Length: 259
Image 1 (tube, rainbow, N blue to C red):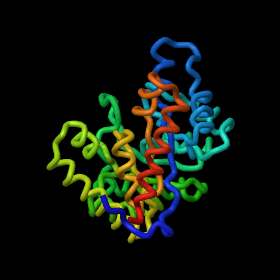
Image 2 (cartoon, rainbow, N blue to C red):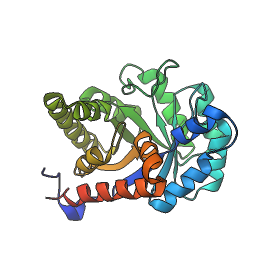
Image 3 (tube, helix red, strand yellow):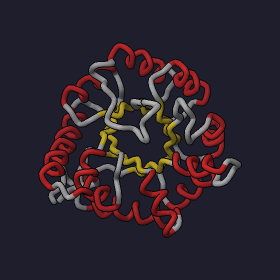
Image 4 (cartoon, rainbow, N blue to C red):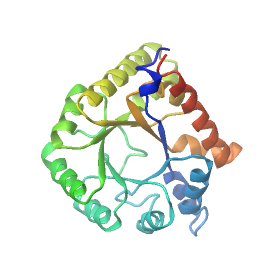
């Protein structure tokens, strides 16, 4: 599949490893094992460019002390996924992660379902974005690749977006070629539109080796955040092997980005 640009102009594709489900495993039994900070260090040693962690309202996996320890102990950027609430804003301003990605959150969902409604929630989101930016935290909005949402993100003043890739990944996994093709076109068009508005473009949700390799061909995307799949693969091959295999898949795709 053809890429989107000249290889010389294609930026390095960063890999952010989401460690939420290491904490899920720990919390299933209680105690301290596996330690999310130790998992983060292993991911970094294997090639992760950053670590992502979602501090949920119900603390179902990552906990406040995990965020504090990650910020203190890892040497790569920490990306805090968070709802746009006063509580989470206060935690972010105290902890000062490198980046914060604002995501939708509902207590009853198993994982983040769909993108943030940046257009409909503009007045609620904008003050949170402004506060984080004033503190020097890089802000991204986790949104669907829809023109209205992308334009809303730019209007709010967020410097980055993360494109929700879950619908595309689910269609690929289900063998729904028509939906997969439609969603792939939306992702590519959305990334191009966002880059044209001056936004940094990230992507994530549901990515595996094959879909990560494909999305790496989109030159305008500069970061992928991947968690559940990598932790699942780690059960079979170990976390270093899983991260290295993902890095290799992304590099193969990026090498085709200028073709």
